[in-house]
Image 1 (cartoon, rainbow, N blue to C red):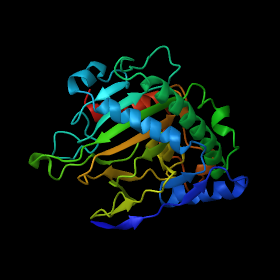
Image 2: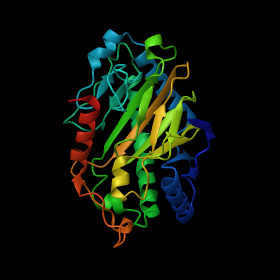
Image 3: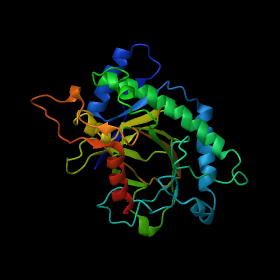
Length: 308
């Protein structure tokens, strides 16, 4: 069941009125779990350059891409490698993707295509990674204010000491086979971590379902807003806020056109303990979840997704 396109709340990252911005973020995270972020400082050229290089990678022969097959959440995942919705009757989602992890992490180095085949690829991706990480860090301060916390709260507890930031390049196919009719580019899921910052090429397909437990589910198309990032709350942040902020179901439907996007998942470092925030619990609303290390939580979610 679906309804007409949805305009999400607009949040202006350049606003000097932090209190008003934080209030708007809180309302967006309580009601939608999604919002548009404008005036974030990443220009049109940088986004287009990143998407253009992403396109070049996915255009390589499958045999070349499989040389960079995903290890330690870094590298290439082919179509059907991932099933985001466990109830799906299909062998896997239609998309293919490429993960880039923390670019300064020496323990789990990234995989990069050869300079001979894609000479500007690594430099372009590292540049975009640094820019989107900066945006995410600035946004986290406003999210802290939206939760009635000190704006440096997440920094003070060490969440942003060597944070787990992953850039995931995504390619959704245009034409699909008869056997894939009814399958999804990305089946229904909620993201695992703190926040996700998404940029797309403007091709439609993203839908959200604001009421997880509603039946039948009501899916709303998310409109493209030129120059805006689409931000959504992940399950870890929902857990941290005692379900004050919602982690919203979303999916990507096949629309008969190729689609490129890049999702940046900003998560705390693996040792950060995620436990109910004081501003989100009370005698009448006690903590719903026990404390857990960020890394333990994320690893379990990945294990369920990839079946290892």
